Length: 579
Image (cartoon, rainbow, N blue to C red; front, side, top):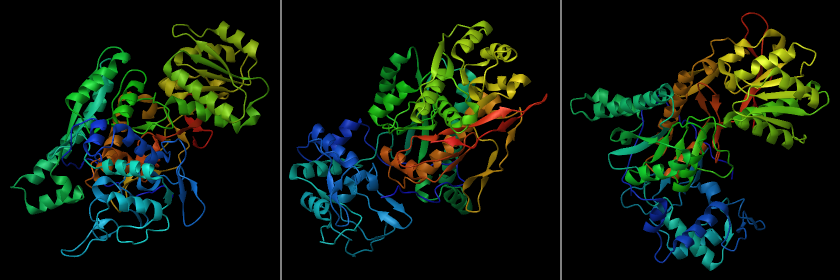
């Protein structure tokens, strides 16, 4: 079944949010145990979960299924989660309704509905009675509900032995059966994670935007619930929040400050979560890699939305962190794709990477090498630069003379420019040179003119676009196809502006997600909804593209060059080079 996409999800009210319902404040294991079938062990529930999500049986074999009467196919193609989603809450896709199959729905009568909206009138019989364990196994095997009604042709008929069927049913009883931690009757709790060595101006830029968002939303809620508010004011607030349900719940934001070395962060995060569990983490920033926080979220099943990091964890299997981009890594990938499409730039010799021994430069080099070799090319020659070592002219000249590279990728900051410019003025002038505009920042404008014509820059941001409100009240991105950028571009100039823009994008996303939970406050549902969203506008990356299971909303970059003259501009030399 194709990935579901919801339409009309974003709205003008991106400063408002929705909210809550009662929840158990417990860890994931205890939530499963609390609603498990009698006698089901934690191991059995994990086995049922694997059948549901991956189509893998306890034996290690793939689940087999018949679809539309055809021969059995591996369950990996038709896992339960592929249509009913990880949360089990289903989807509505262009008029095709995939019903919820979580524990809270399956084992109760199903009211008659229109496009998933319950509409049974008083005294009207339900569409079907509650499933029992036996009738649910019958539905899984033969595709008929408790009334004997044949389910749709798109519903696979699974080949399940009795024990495996009971394992899957036991897991379904626990699936989205109780609201997730962090949600109470009157509020929904979030937290943001900050290491104590983050510069104050960066920290405050993020916190100011997050706090402003929450204060405005909560102020609106108080105004709506004030008995002295006029009917017109109350109706206006209700319309902006899209439903009455969203007018009675407030948001709160805790600050989880991490102190000391990164290897101590995990214990600190666990303690914060033990004292006051939250529904999700918002934004956040640490010095260095996000990996310790990422791993904490994975193992505790806590969503983390748009952390401010250029060093995300790159994983094909992680679920709980949604990043704004793949960071520096995707710039290295873009450089590889550009060179692959411009064979005329490569004239014999290897590709040479000179890499400052920093996390940012190593990510650039790793992205290039992986993509370059996937394109069938030989591995580049990589020369590391220790953190304190200057890139001197003599060192670079000897390196170029020895390797005779077809292209030089210099993954370093502005300290490398004097040596590069000195070499380019002599007889040992290199071929095409690649630098990271993001790593150089404003220093790119100091690049001297003789070097500009052979230097290419990876640039991961949108060139020119603005967010406008459509006639339906939906924020959309309006691009003007501008191909040059002047020196005052905020993406390279102001770190504070970048963080503010990224945090505002987060709050817009959060409003849309909470609104479209439709009262189903399950953490997996939050991420299911994110995977079904239409593309979202972003002030730095332009358009964020989401999809089921997609964890990196922006996945590419442009290749640009500086123009000649005393007031150079950046000009595109490629289209968007993305995955």
